[in-house]
Length: 501
Image (tube, rainbow, N blue to C red):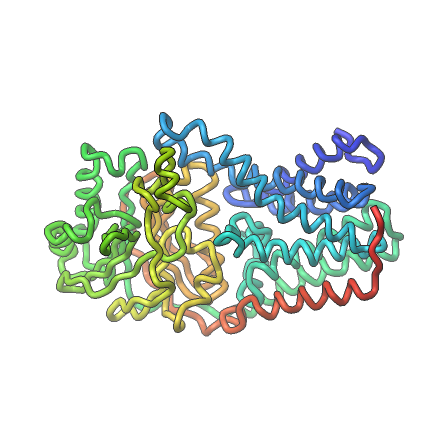
């Protein structure tokens, strides 16, 4: 494959796609972050070889579709739960999802090529406008920040920078230490410039090491939380022949051993609607033997249905309720669902009309002596803005999820990595229970203190870490970084002229 500047454009497109695939090796479960950096360093040579802004856009799109296609390969898994109905959609879903997300990158490449006068200006503009495109990807059409560049650092000390500036800024730093360096290595600058372009990487490594050394020690609350993992495959989860077995499995795990301070079941772990669950919840309370329980359940509210979390106190009374508010498009609801239902198109998790309804938004649940928790149901944990939207600072994050939808390869691991990021960003522990795994107790530094492996049924009693003081990112959010990126972009544009092409 010809990656040279003078090769045929179709070969350069193919090379960009291959580099995108390589870049995704830095994500979980592989975590080969060096591969991601190498791919990004190689990218400027191809970008600068583009003769026109249109070709630059196509090249950026090719890189991104390779990256997102590899990163989101797990997205075919939900279509395999009911293959007779949905399997035919799987390849289209992957291509359209990866291709759609790649449009953000294509737009950034087009702008950088259009507005940069010199090779150096184009590369630095690419750093800035691509960072803005990634910001937009987290918000447009409800947002989907999965596979953000910051995620490659999760198993390194650099992940602690999330506590300072958050995931979008860490993604910007990743681009700033790779793309300019690639400019020099591609021969577009002299030896002196190479040293200058290597400086951001050196400063980044030094800052990461230095900040890691200053992170406070995590202490324990002295409380114990039991994480319940029933391991119910999605194709059996609601089957009347299996659902009672999975429920009894969770009841058995709840009743075993010494009494913890809290027991947490995963998302939609109760096989009946909340309105009809009095007897079922009584069984749960009896098994808990005085321990409070958090569990996932579906409920109706008039003509609407909700994906919910409830809290049962020591007496078994329901004293807390949270309705998921950030829903999965085409998973939990379908836009114009009643119309789409006429064509046989439903959300995977709700086979009726519009599907689930959105709850009122982020709120806290009081968990007795453990303090206040910010509830997160499944997909909500990938959005840093959903945590920042909390009405007050909780003592912990609490995620219940059903990762059976994500299969057994990369999806559950990437979902866990993003949960760990949210813990670092806020300086808060996260309690995480997943139907098929990976359930984990995550400390405020993003470290996994206890866990249950993917695809295994069981429970683990985990000490609950104490929260750290509020992080800088928890206090400021993304606004300062966003404003800085906009200001730097406008400033750079003032000192460069557009090129024609």
